[in-house]
Image (cartoon, rainbow, N blue to C red; front, side):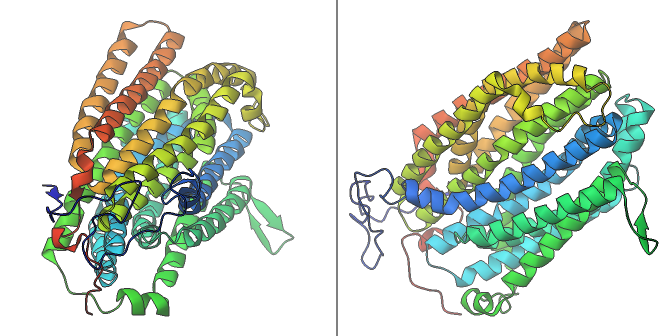
Length: 505
């Protein structure tokens, strides 16, 4: 159950005067210039300062995936076709525990906003406990990686490579979950530059290992490695994920963090805290899972249409991810700012941060949406090396990019608004909407798939359903945000809101 903020008898702060009506002892947020979109509190400058490092971080991840796809396209069209459904299946398996772990960010943000730094250490370790509970899922998934692809009726040439990629990446997924909890420690406080440096460094390592492992290397007669293809791509990502986790662990355990946040002196187990973290986090994870399940059905059904539709879909999705994933960084920044402002009792400033972020997101995606239609060749550069039949793949990809251009603006809207309401704790609503919309997407997609006879018609039907799904989500989440119910929610204890008295160690 989502708790609500207590009625203190004081009027809420307004956008014109953020400190008006605050309880005695509450620290006001100075408004640099109430009329300036850029300078005001939670305006352009504040959002960019928090969001830009996260956007760079997520861009580095998408660029890493993009390079991974290009290298595999050079290596083999079959490997390119296999990596999309296998990667989606890994992500689907990962989505629930990862979404649960990532929600640690909102707890850190709200405790940080409320001035309760010592509780952040407790949040961190309870998040690690939850991450550990999910480890057996990935260990068991390694045992039969080919089964789901065989059941989907994929050609054996695809199944072998899909299973290889799936098995290796499952091992890396364990590190990914731990890394999400450790990353949340810094993001929730707004220390996003640290996150950017680590993410860019490990993404660069991943790209280097991709090149070496996929194509092989030789340093004289002393050191050599045969080309590993898709297995090398999965191995490179797995190594990079674990390196990133270890780097964040080292940074978390530094002396400043141990002293300020009680990192090593708050090991006592709290049933209440872990219960709240799982309740809210699992809702976030379930949303991730349901949406990933829909995308998994999308990719598996398209993979069954043959290598060319599967490869074209992989290229279109990869191109879109390289450009669009930074918006996820902006959404994470929105959740963080909303969480911090809810924690310190400024929900109207949380709304301002959301609108500011939406302006930025719409400009960003609008530019690329136009480019997808007018200059599709720019996004296909580098994919054709080593692929004899890439001309047909490129022709089909250009058409699919029209669908991407149609939905990318709406995707930006829904991601920003859902990030805002989840930052306050409105996760149950998000789960309900995910269940309804994901179900409609999958049922509608499968119905059209069986009703149509042409493979091209089936391909375009699935992409039309994907576009409609995203448009519907943007309308629903936008309406929910405008209703304003999220302003009365939080995930931390109600008596901590408006309080800036530091908890005693």
